[in-house]
Structures are given as C-alpha cells and as structure tokens.
Length: 118
Image (cartoon, rainbow, N blue to C red; front, side):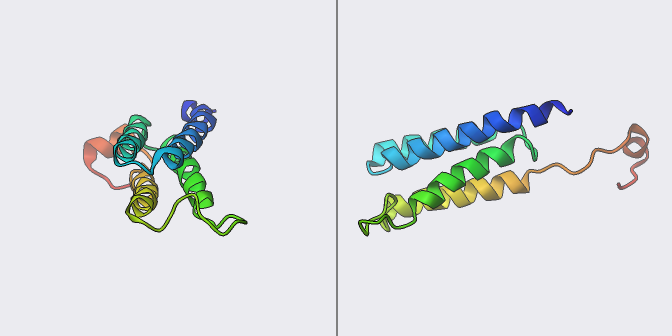
C-alpha cells in the first residue's frame, strides 16, 4: 500500500473540520479572512495527489455544499450575501486546485533521461 493512501482518511477529516470551522465563523469579515487563509494553507500543506489533496477538497466542499442547502426553517447556514459567495467560491477554488494539481504517472529514469513522453 502506498504511503499516501494512508493519509487519505486524515486529510478527509481535516477537510471536514476546516469546512465546519469556515461555515461556523464566516459571518464576520475578520473571521472569514482567517478561515479562507486557513483553508488555503491546509490545502497547500497537503501534498498534491489523489490520496492527499483531493480528499481534503472533497471533505471541505461537502460541508460547504451541505451548509448551502435550505434548512427546514427555510433559512441557510451559508446565506446568499458576499460572505456566503466567498465561502462558495473558496470551495470551488479548493476543488479546482486539488484536481488541477493531480500528478500523472511518474516516468521511469530512462524516459526522464531521454525525454520520452509517458
């Protein structure tokens, strides 16, 4: 089993926790700025890959997505105001960054030396 596969549950939990914290504090401008900075730092701290950065992004986006669905009372946890749109935009940016930075299959030393494409 590859070492990064063991990181997937931890990065998923980190994404879920970061998403919950972001939704919980996004109403104040200072808290929102801190939440976005924390999210970006957590995303960039995870190594690029399917088993590391992608689970973080999926956990974060799942929490933000669920918080955007109307509640039975008719209101939203993430409202349709500037702060809410920043949270939604952050979730989309996290997803896009995590998928854009997935590494392809690694090349063998011979292919790297001679410049062959995989």
